[in-house]
Image (cartoon, rainbow, N blue to C red):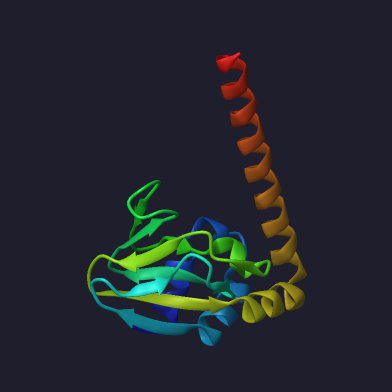
Length: 147
């Protein structure tokens, strides 16, 4: 697979596609590929979160507690998104459900891209603000229904 393939994949990831092609190009050049087999852990609860992972092929189960609140994600998913922006412990475990490949984006690389592409940083900020606003509105609607 080529850098162009990675850029095309990043362009399909909602958090990354707002960055623009120049920023995605830098991310693709600096990214690392990692292969995992069935049952391999990408990370586990409590690990230091210093990167995000874009699923290139395969699938992963992401769960905060074994088999509780689990999500299965596949190609084009970004796992560990918040760790791209802030230091934190992993709140979940991610395990490969089949032979899989991820593209690791380190927080340091991601932050360098945002620093060198201020327009991309502004678009990302606006996207995150819109998501937060939508989540708050959903919580308010749910609260209103429950009361």
